[in-house]
Image (cartoon, rainbow, N blue to C red; front, side):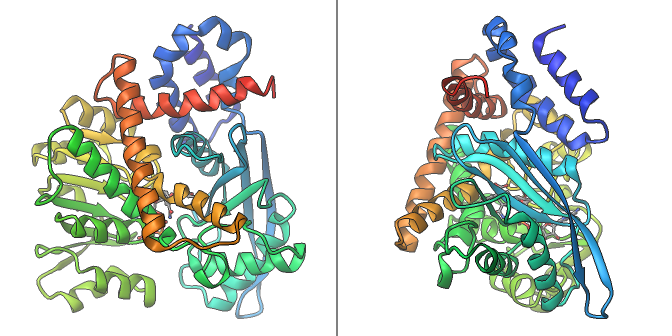
Length: 444
Ligand SMILES: NC(=O)C1=CN([C@@H]2O[C@H](COP(=O)(O)OP(=O)(O)OC[C@H]3O[C@@H](n4cnc5c(N)ncnc54)[C@H](O)[C@@H]3O)[C@@H](O)[C@H]2O)C=CC1
Ligand SMILES: O=C(O)CCC(=O)C(=O)O
């Protein structure tokens, strides 16, 4: 059995009931086959792949808090510190009822390669809880965040592990978490990113993942002789990534005609009204059922359906495994030319293969959504030098980083004889730097 297959089997055996983690490992290792085979003896002797798929450390803890009725609630908290070869652990905190250890591990594993691709000195980690902020009062969210940080603060710090937002963790949650860290540890430091602008946040971090996704998409199209302007786009999700992806796509001359949330989706033939979307989701925290009140031509429907619309470009920006083989078939049949992942692992492996085989340009999440964590690293730099950069400064650095990532993934694919396979290119380019740093640091 090949070394890659042995390690995939080991991961499944050692981590049963973690299907998302298996999926992420398979996707990465499959595309590293060419590189691993060329170095098989050395990698095997050094157990390189076994070390890559085993987190350096992981924490699981109780999070008790009191709800508005005086009832004690108990959630489970997680932080997985996956790999620190190239810098302090870095990655978001997800607050969603579906969170379990396997989900956090898949996200942490992806983060290692994504962070490497940014070219910045950040290792990979991820955390979160099965707490659901939806429908909770501000006081309840604060009570949860304070309890969560009371435990988490023992394991993180500006030079060790720097969490940030993810699904369910936005500016409000980051504020409560930061306040509790400072109160317990007594240090004012850049221990979290995605902070508010009045206490150490960076301009453009809020916009960064969505904007970065469009910078990379535009560059990928350009490499293939195609223009973004004038294209029709389907976006899924209606959270942080989806909102700013929609905003930037329209600024660059494309038309976004869909968004979705966990209960339904909107089709707006005139192009999504970003101001209305922000009002509904960021200000009022309402459901997308409200959208047609702002735009009478738009249609709201329960369930899923964004991938059935005829578009040139699809940007999945909601959650993992939201774009299946049947969706990929509809996109191809409707003439879609490119898919770029704003979310983490939103496309199933079968769907990805189908899209690639049918000539659709495919940018994987670890490259396409790296703008968020890259700008978090820029926030860390600003915190270290106690300075704040302008929006334009951060945005132009972000754009440079995304254009670089695009070229690096394209070049790596070409170098290894799989030109145009950006999944392989991104995995290889991310892997090479991590391996180089791991090798230099001995067997750790
Ligand atoms: N916020 C960031 O900077 C980054 C986020 N990501 C990824 O982007 C994706 C979206 O994250 P955010 O926009 O930050 O979160 P968010 O909490 O702001 O928005 C998530 C959106 O996805 C929808 N959603 C969540 N679970 C769903 C489900 N099971 N079915 C259908 N819709 C669902 C929600 O209704 C919401 O509209 C996630 O995969 C996240 O890991 C990746 C890189 C950075
Ligand atoms: O900004 C960060 O540190 C983390 C972003 C994140 O969680 C991700 O890239 O998936």
